[in-house]
Amino acid sequence: MFDIRKVVDARYLEVTLYDKNDRSITINVEPPKLKMLKKIISLSSQKSEDQFDDFVDALTKILNKNKEHTDVTDCVLEMSYDEMQALTVEYFEWIEDTKNLKN
Image (cartoon, rainbow, N blue to C red):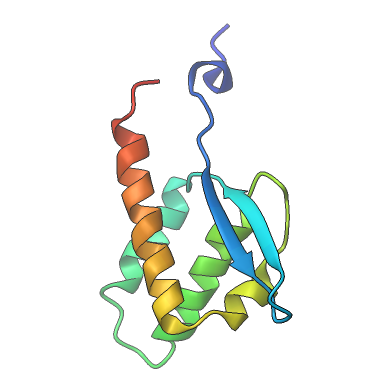
C-alpha cells in the first residue's frame, strides 16, 4: 500500500513573531495546500477595497497552519505592512526552495 506521508518529508519554515507585549513566539509553518496557493496568487490581481483585508486573512491562515497548532492571529494584526510584505516574500522563496529539494 502506498502512503504519501511516508514518501514526502515534511518541511517547515521557522518564523518568529511578536505579540503586542513584544514577547516572541516561534512557530514552524507548514507548506501550503494548492487551494491556499491559488487564493494567495489570486490576490495579486484583485483590485478592490477589501484587498488588504484579504491579504491579512490569507497571511493569518498561512501562519496558523503551523506544527505547534498555535493561533497567531493577534501577532499578525500587530505587524506593520512592511513586516507582512517581508514575511510573504520569505515565505514564497521558501516554497520555491522547498519545491526544488529532492525528497
